[in-house]
Length: 110
Image 1 (cartoon, rainbow, N blue to C red):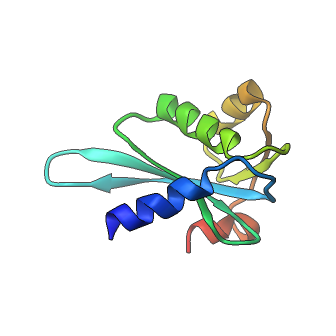
Image 2: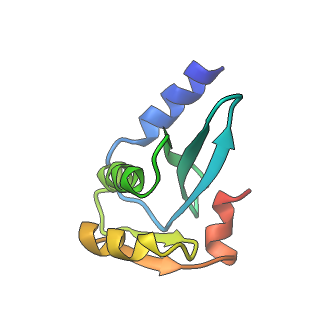
């Protein structure tokens, strides 16, 4: 099951023109440690573009956002929550950024 999901997500990472992207992170735990689960989803289609699991925080967000940017050939717009680190990361990567707690970004939470 996990391999099949990985193949589907890998196929979605092919660079193509995309609409609005919703991004979110959450902390997941196993028996000994915590990890960050990052996910990006295309809002209109609902397809997952990139999933990234890491032990780190903001530095890993940069890696994750670079993967999202590589999956898109157009100038994308990413909707995020109001975490402060997104502002400078989006400026650094030259990605259009909108902060949104509900509405379009909420598709990533479902």
